[in-house]
Length: 60
Image 1: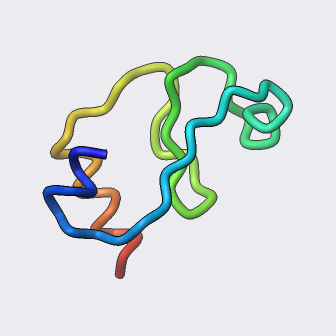
Image 2 (image 1 turned 90 degrees about the vertical axis):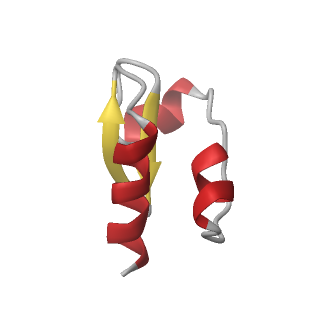
């Protein structure tokens, strides 16, 4: 949420706790970050700078 606020990127953010939904993405370890349907991180909390990079890449 902090990165979205800092970058002014408009996006919806969902906190998913349903194991079935996480399994659809092949995510076993948590926390995980999925952007535009792509698993960017699983099993660790990425740095703010890495999240910013991924958001910019997906923004195009």
